[in-house]
Amino acid sequence: MLNLKNFINYVEKRNPNESEFLQAVTEVVEDIIPFLNENYPEYETLKILERLAEPERVVSFRVAWLDDSNTVQVNRGYRVQMNSAIGPYKGGLRFAPDVNLSILKFLAFEQVFKNALTSLPIGGGKGGSDFDPKGKSDNEIMRFCQSFMTELYRHIGAETDVPAGDIGVGTREIGFLFGQYKRIQNNFTGVLTGKGVNWGGSYIRPEATGYGLLYFVACIYDYIDQNLEGKTVCISGAGNVAFYAAEKAIALGAKVITLSNSSGTLYDEDGFTHEKLTYIATLGRNIDKFTEKYKSSSFHAGEKPWQFKCDIALPCATQNELNGDDAKKLIENGCKCVAEGANMPSTAEAITVFHAAKVFFAPGKAANAGGVAVSGLEMSQNSIGQQWTSAKVDTRLKAIMENIHKTCLRYGKEESGYINYLKGANIGGFVKVAEAMKSQGIV
Ligand code: GLU
Image 1 (tube, protein in one colour):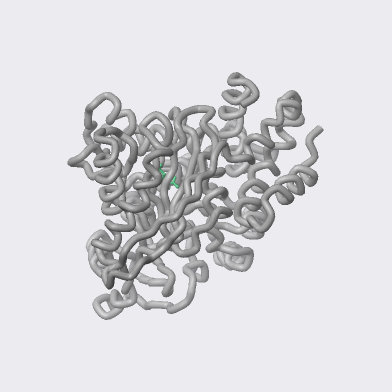
Image 2 (cartoon, protein in one colour):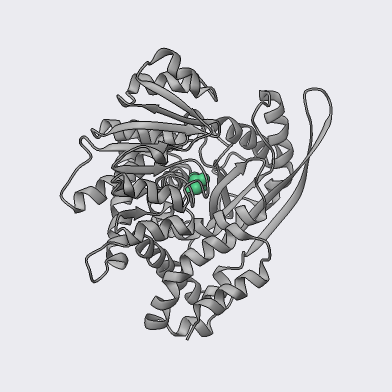
């Protein structure tokens, strides 16, 4: 019988000082080990869990580039190819100063389960750099991306590993990366997703994570015979995910009262509208300037959104942005549902608080899978040389999110009737990957 504590110790010993990776593995194996001992005891001898917690390959490389003042800059680039049991490695690239191997391994590990939940044939990976895109010129971004791809190109391919965007990597960066890949390989191929719609990208890809998050939340409410009409929503973040989550929440009749970035939280007691969101998008990082135009709003410098009273909380910024105290505050204020638009935004303590309060807690690997799902649809469109309409992609995205919700119900419904979405997502993703690993032998 596999023992949870022993397994966590084993992972900790092999990956010293990688707290985020250990957190992500612990969050999964707490659910998997009891399930596996009961249903798949043979997986212990096959060392399926040990293999899942060991990346198939990790590359780390130097990225040297010249900034606008002709000074040489040196960053570190990575690609973590975690698991390819069900398809080519798939997952984003993150450019942010805090990027390190622990963060990329946690993200790649999560991605394996998330991608399996989409039902598409995609394995899990993640990569990026400690490069900080903030304050850089377009030319600096381009030179960095070209230097980054000049090493990365040899490790990726449309049928090997297909990176995409994540924090700090959007359509602009994917464009520069793609241009350099094509130049080196003399090959126009679906090696990256999140491309522009005029050059191989899919409609709805920019919106997909935020829209998918709301489709998932709508499934949760539908399950209890309710809808989002009149519900108050707090969202953190002001990037792609937060923005399109807000847009879809509003379209579904909810009232969105917060957005945030690393400088603080923007609160609007009247709720944001489509027009207000369009205005925020023009402000860049200076979201505090919004208050000059809209008197119903206030900016709370250095604060998080979780102090405001809401029915639904959607953390869409970054890992560990919502801790145990924030979780308690949300519960005290009557919050009933937390769905993660970011990857692992809730700490282990916060999750314990949500489960104890029996609120709906939808983990990122289920709730934010819409982004990678539409990336998978972009790969399909590229490989058949077609481009589907927005309506077709959106319909498929919605169906995928509904299917993930069903998987969570199947594996996460407890005797009391409470739906443990985390358990459902962990087991649902695991079963698919583990069966594929078993079929493919000891590799
Ligand atoms: N970075 C996104 C995620 O966390 C999307 C990855 C992709 O599209 O490959 O799932």
